[in-house]
Image 1 (cartoon, one colour):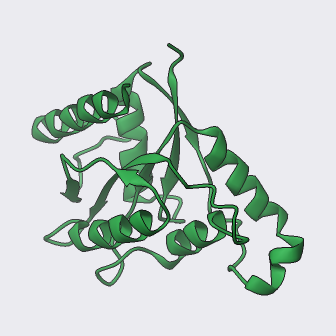
Image 2 (image 1 turned 90 degrees about the vertical axis):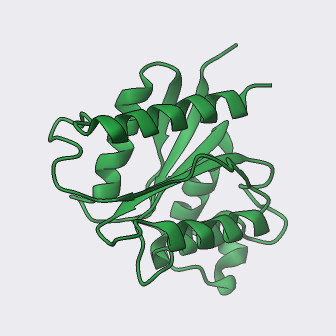
Amino acid sequence: MATRRIGVIIGSLRAGSFNRQLAGAVQALAGDRFVFEHIGIGDLPLYNQDNDADFPAAGLRFKHQVEACDALLFVTPEYNRSIPGVLKNAIDLGTRPGGSNSFAGKRAAVIGTSPGAHGTVSAQQHLRNVLAAVDVAVLPQPEIAIQYREGQIDAEGTITDERLRKRLQLFLDRFEAWLSP
């Protein structure tokens, strides 16, 4: 069987994003069990139904990248107890125009980190609700909502916190098993 292609969608645009660091660390920890493709959302225009007849090129690129992946990994921070607007916008674009939902039938996992005491618990719950509405099945467990702490992941993307490394290894094992036929 070919190695599964996982599309990684990071819900933060910040260059030094903690979630971008987390995505890189998960990718390194996974080794060669998956092929990861980062799907950028920073160039996507705001969704506007008036543009459905002449859909924006960046939106089409995003849709094609999602469709080309076997599964998705959403890595999101929590903004005001929900998902960032750029992530919701990307999902909206991926399901438009009507009848062309690029997410339909996909499988996905959701992880994230934020400095708040509860990590990304609220954002992940909101994201799971949105993904259910667009026909994406999400790995139910383990939930990985990490309270960000300086030094958990070093500058090279190595997970230095042993407890976190074990949680993420369990996550990867479960995600791989869940994706298996």
